[in-house]
Image (cartoon, rainbow, N blue to C red; front, top):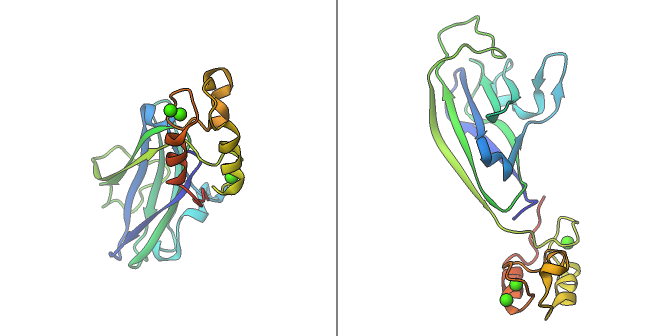
Length: 195
Ligand SMILES: [Ca+2]
Ligand SMILES: [Ca+2]
Ligand SMILES: [Ca+2]
């Protein structure tokens, strides 16, 4: 659902250094966004996005250019099996968003700078696909409840939503009216929370 925030956790069963990234390419960025936590501008590290198990020198970077948005993930040899990284995802628009999970094959160089990794083979390990439907949280308080139902009910039977700012989002199937079809689409997300 648009507005929903999810947490992506990268876990490992290895105890060794590793490098990879989560990435959203091209127009997929119109539908979803990834972000890292707690940037430290001294160490240039998103220190809230790597967990203890990733090792004492783990680093997380964030990079956005005209082609892609990526969160770089680097663990070190003091890492232990467990949850290594945490990355936030937000559904921003109706549609599909693919998030690629890549491994960077850059190991073997102990003086490698994790902030400026040399180009190397990058392998797509897994792809997450999120499908976003229109929000049912018409009041914008991150919960779908009676207050939202009241908004929907206030437009029930209206047939000119195109002239009324899409009936404040309650015309969920976007066919211009608010009727029992929209009610059913709403009910599917009853008591949903977006955070
Ligand atoms: Ca609400
Ligand atoms: Ca409708
Ligand atoms: Ca209808």
